[in-house]
Length: 194
Image (tube, rainbow, N blue to C red; front, side, top):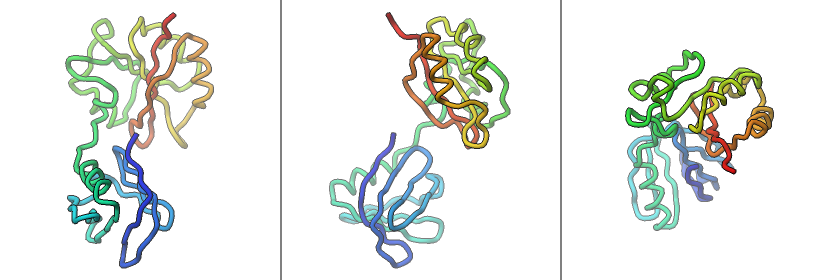
């Protein structure tokens, strides 16, 4: 997901060859300059010819691109990133049921107004702490997509490769992943057809 380009950035008076990467949470610069700027910290972009001018806190950041690419980046930077509920595909019209308990503020906020009892839910969201948690959760899917939510980084309690192998053995295939929060990640699975 996101947008990427190799280009030049001007930061604190110096020019740097960089690789830009924009996703729903941040603008990242790598290469000659390493910066990670949360989308919420990026000031309103201004397009000037082939340059995008940004404010990062009180400091200016200039990004040089060819004019057509600059216009695309300007549009991408202005576009609001999707909410977690949108990434999960849940809403009041397409509610989810949570299997397990969480105190994760981002997940709870996404479920607010977009949850229903299991019999009425279009999507299941299962918090998984061990491979053994998968079969009972998947049995409840009954043809509906199921998001498998696990810890990430130092919060991980099970390896992704072990999860995927077990889910494939249960007849499920993954189709999409997204970050839930700093602590959690989610991968959507559905029963394989045929």
